[in-house]
Image 1: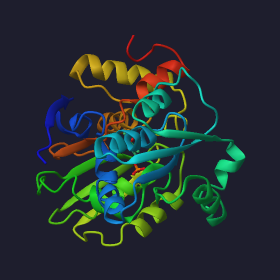
Image 2: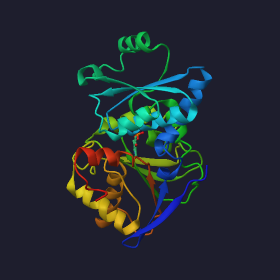
Image 3: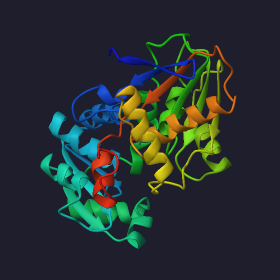
Image 4: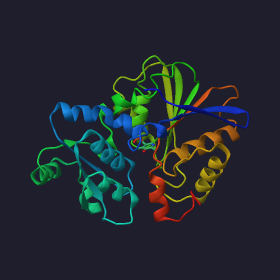
Length: 293
Ligand SMILES: *Cc1c(COP(=O)(O)O)cnc(C)c1O
């Protein structure tokens, strides 16, 4: 797949942006790569239903619903919380034919237990199970292809990190020598770094990496006016939309590091736009018309 790269310049630092948000129509971003081999495997196992979990605004739910429609596979979304006819992500999922099942936070905490899986099997029959966020070995295998056309053009590569599945794939890219920095979108600590080490079963030894925890802007899906301001300014200047949950934090982090001399001049920088723009509508519905105002 030929991926588009856009060039921007910030304070004399050229930055290439890998536009995963532009691949496909509805199924795009890093979720395209995370789902790719899982869908193939579901077909391989002759399972005609994908079942997965997520929050009510989840990019993973949105992508799984889109993938189901595209590949003619039934999808079931187990959603934390309640239905809301105004929630754009849930309405989209339904329009793609996804069957939604709402469970409370307490029940949701037990989603990964064998007992709950049995309950679900009794209710829905056999299905291919995708974990919340879609991170598993096949997702990582798919994400190891994101940079397969990049070769050794970049000294520094940045991407936003949630569960760590995508970065685990990125640091497993073959024939690539670089340094990868994951910007954690959650308030986090070493446990995420350890989790990534566990997820990446065959990392490329030529790729060094770290996870930066300084740019969560208050935590996962938390409102930050500073971040919203940044996203709006970025769009005005470069005509590229970022989302407030993931890519805005990554780009904000890169600009901050440039401002504070944390990136040496002359380094060739790539930022991976992992997509997630569907989340903006959900954001505006929850808060106010602030990004697209
Ligand atoms: C899901 C998602 C991520 C996080 O991916 P992980 O594999 O969970 O680390 C990053 N960016 C966007 C836009 C996403 O939708």
